[in-house]
Length: 134
Image (cartoon, rainbow, N blue to C red; front, side, top):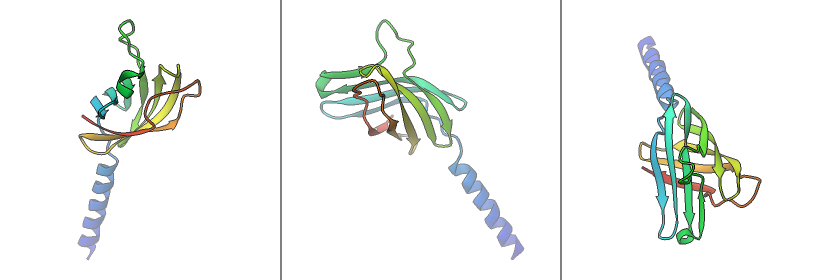
């Protein structure tokens, strides 16, 4: 009986550790429809992430991309990863301000983007919520 209890405890601890193991968000992530797309390029080092985001809406009528030819090194997304969730600040070039979002790693090929605080400086065309793939 004691062996079963110990085995159950060990399995629970291993499952809990695996469920909260830090995920790697690095890569090119995208969501696209016929007339719009949303892309995130992320580099992760340890528990920090940085990169760029770009939203192109209505066949290019609205473009919300912080990276330009003149400013290729601009970091438009930065944050911290805990387990499978990254909490980030993002730059909306259209709103000319910072907002906050969470990125949840669903699997190796999918993540969920969700804005938790919109930029308060104007209109942003960054999607409120989107499931991206790589």
